Length: 156
Image (cartoon, rainbow, N blue to C red; front, side):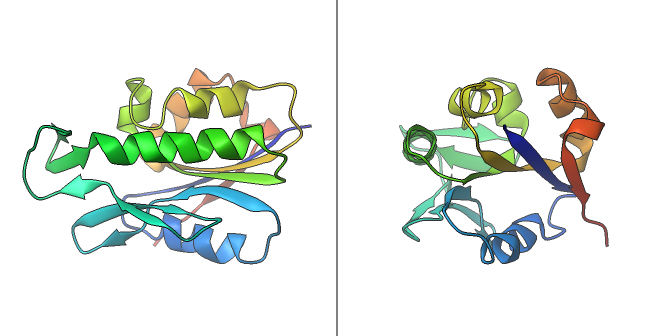
């Protein structure tokens, strides 16, 4: 049976920090974290500790702009490959940090996140970060009912 745990809260409230503390007590956990360092965002492979920078300082041939951020396409390709690998192997828990505006547009970490969430042939726990303002849309998109998922709401 698939379990889904959603960590939600406002931007910069500590969702990733909370997630890092949570997974330190779990075994057989794989997936992607998105830590920040000042104005830079990174993907971090939970299993290997490897980092890949998501944001750039200037637009280049392999970047795109959304809001005030310039994102690197290669970093999303890397993160999708890591999540695909995590999904294909037998792991107890897959972490996805985070499902945001890009994913709602079918970009970013998609389509692998949808595949992980909608798979019916896997017995896994999915821990996913979703910003509070996107939570309702997330639940609706994946036809999830609040009573069927565990939601951890972080507040100030």
